[in-house]
Image 1 (spheres, rainbow, N blue to C red):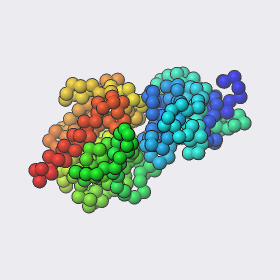
Image 2 (image 1 turned 120 degrees about the vertical axis):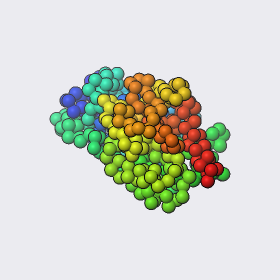
Image 3 (image 1 turned 90 degrees about the vertical axis):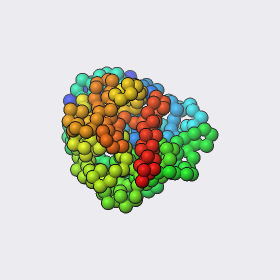
Image 4 (image 1 turned 90 degrees about the horizontal axis):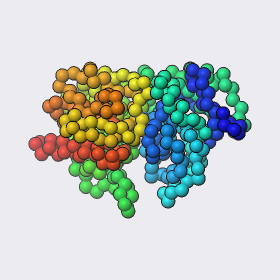
Length: 385
């Protein structure tokens, strides 16, 4: 317990309690707890739709030191349920900072707790798997501990939970903003070459920017879009985005759409994260829940076809079971941390996906070739047609 009166409490379902200093919004939230090892990008992490239903423990202690700004949001509002940090966020010191992290979280309705032994907490997550937790912030320091533990135990967990419907867009829209570049910032696309339909299971903005920078005229459709909805746009390719929750649950409506698109067309298809898992399920594979998942910006992945190693950004709690990949579906990438699947492709068609996030650029450009591969596949198809 910190030396002063704690104003926040993190209760694990096994009864373990962590006290600290609360910041951001007041109140209580329940979620699954994970940890992220990235040294930068806390704002992008908090606004990544893939973190829906999760409280994030940051293993890097300097969280909040560069503030926040509108350009770094991956979606309109924070999606992660809350954050756990070692040190109370300091006053920001960065020329791009538009607002302190504490004020941003309070305005956006997200709870933070500082002063926590994040090393101990991370070790607990690794040992027992991602626990269910209740996080409470009360400025007067009063907590009903039994109620908090009970709330954590009553959280249903992410297995069987479809969260894509909660974070997807309400209606279709066009995207033409390209990647950030000095000195213009995010410039608009001027001469797109390929029409792409992107299915939004919780798409990060920077993924859409990378598609636009690769020459794609992007139309984003909701997660529940049908094959008829997709093909009505006469696309040159289909992109399957990242997103949260159990892929098997989202697959109930996503898999039939993907299978129909694959059966009716020869369109190139590219998937990332949940989109990778959706494609794998559509091709006949299965997914499984991981012990504590992969969350960070320093994950080495080996490309089995080239022998190269990429330093990647990851955020997933489920993985494709490579032992269930059917004939004709090739494993292309694996994690060098635990050997889990990180990429697949069809042997005879330009249909491929990866588990990690090439748009996050931790390498920094190790994985951008995937967007170029997608664009090249569409160019080849159009040239033959």
